[in-house]
Amino acid sequence: MKSVSRDLILSFESSCDETSVAVIENGDTILSNVVATQIKSHQRFGGVVPEVASRHHIEQITSCIKDALTQAEVDYDDLSAVAVTYGPGLVGALLIGITAAKAVAWAHQLPLIPVNHLAGHIYAAQLVAPIEFPAMALVVSGGHTELVYMPVENKFEIIGETRDDAAGEAYDKIGRVLGINYPAGKPVDELAHRGQDTFNFPRAMDHDDNFDFSFSGLKSAFINTVHHADQIHEQLNKADLAASFQQAVIDVLSDKTVRALREFPVKQLILAGGVAANKGLRDRLTHDIQRFTNTKLELVPLSLCGDNAAMIGAAGEMLYRHDVRADARLNADPGLEFEWLKQPQQN
Amino acid sequence: MKILAIDTSNRPLSVAVMDDDHLLAETTMTTHRKHAEFLMPVIEDLVKKAALSPNDLDRVVVAGGPGSYTGIRMATTAAKTIAATLSIDLTMVSSLLTLCLNVSMPVGLINPIFDARNENIFTGLYRFDNQGKLVSVIEDQHTNLTDWLTQLKQYTEKITIIGDTDAFEAKMRSALPNRLVVADQLADIPSAARLGIYGRNITPVANVDSVVPRYLRLTKAEADWKKSHPNEDTQNYVEKI
Ligand SMILES: [Zn+2]
Image (cartoon, each protein chain N blue to C red):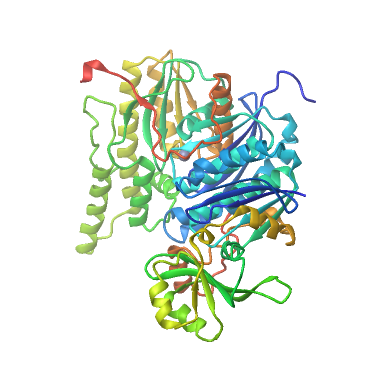
């Protein structure tokens, strides 16, 4: 069944608490996407413990490879390349995927493609429809909150990012105060839909003349409100608390995104990352995008918002076409970042 | 039998390619800690220099711990992935035992030691039996020097210490008067060639996919959890979704 036009990428993702291996055809079709999640393990500790994460990755890695190939009904001979996340993420966790990917690439003499985890989140969109350039991506997850401008393919430029907590991190922290275990994004989202924005928490930096975010002030305001009520034995409505928190997050994310779209007209806006699964945020951007008649909104499907290797394979295929290669020395880069867009007028 | 042997348990990196008991190529170095960066290039280089291709390998032998967590994970991940992806045998050997293979003229008992910081050590006790076979006398463990010395005092033979011995030698000498022999410095560095020869005769693991390093120590988070949840099931914390 092997055809000359068929590019098959075996991809690896292990940057945090999911071990994932996928086979992607021609950069846009998922043949398999095996994800072994460690959430249950880290829930014991209320968050991801890096050494525990590394230990789980090594338990899972080769069985994930086998499952991915079996489900895709392909063999090593069919593969064109191996792609792997090399950052950002937890160094010990990243190293398991990297070492395994390097071993497979060497054993079968395949090219090795280094993939930025955030490019992977953005390229999850490619598994739904081709990305059209120029494009903008709002990447929101437990570790990241970034606006990324992509003037052409394989050019990623940060135009704004969080100055403190990531949006997903803020969800986990206020979740703890509400008695919701990590990961708190989904339960807080559900709770928020049953409440009203009555607390009017601060929208930090919403009116600042930049595209940056800040969520630590919001988090503190939330925690102070709850602690103050506890001290005077007042019972606050949890649904209203969640709704008020979520509304503040969504307002800032969408206001900044709208402003970015005005300054950088694009054909496509991509919402990606774990927090992209948030229903409130999806609804709001779906509404806001209507003002931009030349911009299409691409919501990464819920099944591909979290960390997975399919998205790494999609980004890997693009990099493969651009001749991006790594050799056997490839190491983890836990603080890997895109370049900032040079904006002389803001200096 | 073409064998690839790997040890990155601690600071030294040692990799060898063997044809049965015959050494084809070996690299051993102590000058860096970046096993993540150096391990695969060294493997690639040695297999090439041995005029082999990855497909020619029959077995991977790995020193699977104890040792530095990252070090034993690098070696074990590379070893289990190479074995799994090429469908060849994988043999796991204790990293402490691997060091004992360096003692060519053993006197009595052999005590390999890895420094685990704060007076803690990874250690075990071995001897060569009458057939010249290396056997375990006290099993590998994570312990502190004081408790270990109590265990050693049950034996009356001479003890050769090997590995990270500098920090512990003085205390051990006074606790075990006239019984301590210190191995020469080169013997403190593992040799993948000797590991390969040893691993050739060890039964391979039955299930490569389930192989994990021998940490011999829970993470702090898990140890604390176990204390507060003594009856909790510790399996199946990871699910394929
Ligand atoms: Zn992610």
